[in-house]
Length: 195
Figure 1: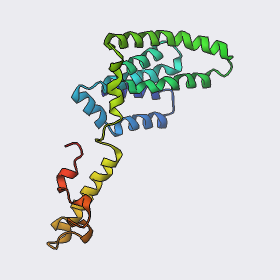
Figure 2 (figure 1 turned 180 degrees about the vertical axis):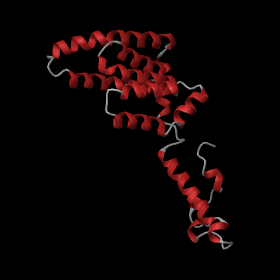
Figure 3 (figure 1 turned 90 degrees about the vertical axis):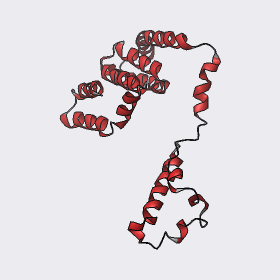
Figure 4 (figure 1 turned 30 degrees about the vertical axis):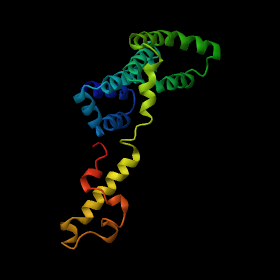
């Protein structure tokens, strides 16, 4: 996490102090994702570090930026979406270049990164079934946004029905078992979609 904070600080250096401070605050505001990833030994942490290195090298226009992005995508494919952001950034920076010179310059920067990514991919690729796991994730039914709403409803209902709030009179009519089918589940078991 310290490496990421140092990279974010360096990215913010050329900007005014308020912008640089906002970048550090935005990164550090919710560090639980990074702490969780590092604690699990998950590849998200390597992906984030390499993605931040890409952001840091992006203004310089050298080959290190695309290589860092390719390495990030090799760690976890979700950062591969940023491959579309890189040329858009370059187009904005090089408005004076014609299309042909822009494409030549971009390809010279991108070919080593693409070669690196493909080399890493082919270390693990055995057949097209390699990608079945990625397609299967779209069908996962756990920890969807609807689950967050369900958990919040469960906690609110439990707080409303607790003896501290309502005395010993019980819960409100619409929260009593039998009145609303979604409240007939055990209070704590239904509030944890990951169990």
